[in-house]
Length: 416
Image (cartoon, rainbow, N blue to C red; front, side):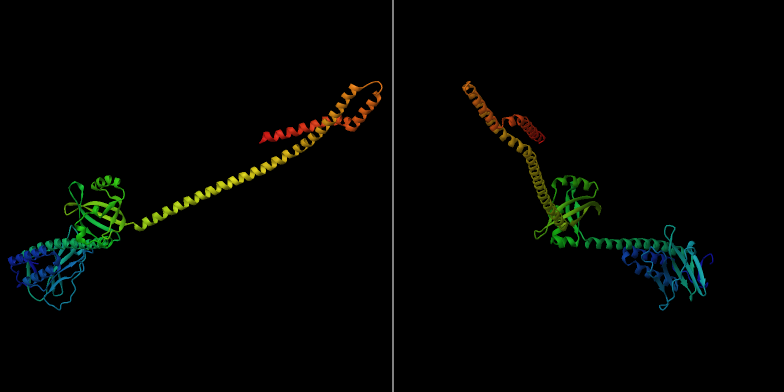
């Protein structure tokens, strides 16, 4: 390389029209700025125009950064249409300099590394083989500016491509989500504004068209389950919290759809908006109702079991009382038997005593000397007849037995 430029082939090569090159590059940048959707086309056309203007044979851009969406996009112009040579590969260590010049057989290459925030993302190359060309320092300076602008544009385009892909993913998640999703504006004072977007499930579930939805707001689609809770929901939502509550949506056909709402405020196009996710909880409510019914049935069954248990306990108590009464009757019956028996004997004894005593009294009243022996003999015969001697010897034991029987009955009564 000489002081006045970089030789690509021979000393007779011309440097090109610098002004024309500047205008050409400005035109390329202008097109890229206005139409970033077709940046690959405009970059490839720009390489062609620069190559033809400077009399080169090949011009290309090779992206080496794996984070670039366009890393596999070929940016290549070749004067020879059938040229199938690959773009040369360079390592990051090779690309540390600002400008690299290589001579490979009869091909001379000028390589401009494409650096982004101290990171090499690729390189721009210019080649000449069969025609004498000199790239002057002015040419290279302009190409370096072009290289930096293209690097910046590719970086912005790469970010745009990534955002577009992410936006497409989120758009699919939004429109084809398993839950109903709404986006609505927030009016002054925090009141809910009109719905500005809704996913496909909203249309399927509620039966409205998008135009019909966009002419209303979320509260008009149903009513909250707990009205008193809404007094705290709105302030929490406006403060940036994720709020959760239940509503009942009414479809266009009048069907009621219970939903669980999750809502969050965010900024959309410099205005406050709310994204609302509404999950259909119809099946959950059916299960809850079924659980409540089952619980009520279990309560009734439990009440019946408790009643049956009380009845069984009462029956067992009555059975025990019956057994106890039978035992008491048995225990009382024994002393009562001999008390009753002795009582009858005592009645008989008393009758004999009465008879004997009456005889004694009658004898005393009518006794005389003439018939004394006869009266005495009558009394003796009466004592013998009434077993007075036995009664006198037996009545003590009889009273003892009666007294013992009465004590036993008294003890039994005191126990119970």
